[in-house]
Length: 244
Image (cartoon, rainbow, N blue to C red; front, side, top):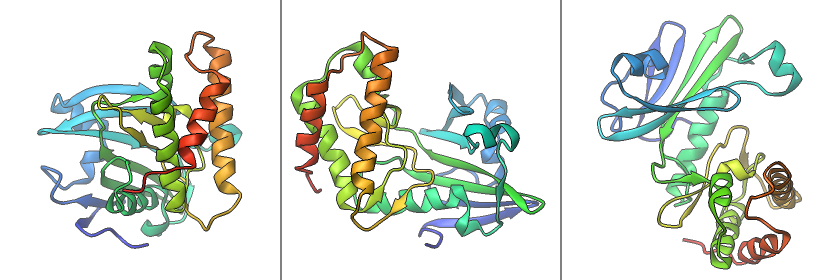
């Protein structure tokens, strides 16, 4: 894959950035620094997971800034360094390119805005800037607040089926990466280490991962509005994806 159409490459010192020139008020590596947005009182919120995700505003556009961090035991030793200096093979640029392809196909994913590779000797650090789905809430928070209808479960399953029909392997399909907006549309986020594959066992592996996520969160949050029959509703929708 190559740099998506409409994106320009900016090089500043150790940084290589791909930025969508029609979506930003400035084109600079500084866009990937939280301090840049803090200095402009443009931080609208944060979320804590593996690291801090920053929600920022550029004019009327709501954005999400994410720094790539490693997980697991290895991540405790090497928190955010990755090998290789080819921009097109970097974590952030690969996710940006995949998002651009999926958006072009009409799949419900965040809008790609920019990616940065920062060279550190033979390694690099990476950051991603995407559009925020402002009216959306993750599936865990929704299920903690109340139940979904059979039609909503089917719509989520159909959405996942659309991605699989397009050959998109979401290697971390879980309850936190599915969003529902105020109009009831479902979205999929976080495509780090994801990609396209020919049909195979990965599709069922994705679904199995999501089921484990639902079961885990139900154990942690017994009041969560999820029961095994809801999984049947989801898989009913999955088998009938609405291709748009």
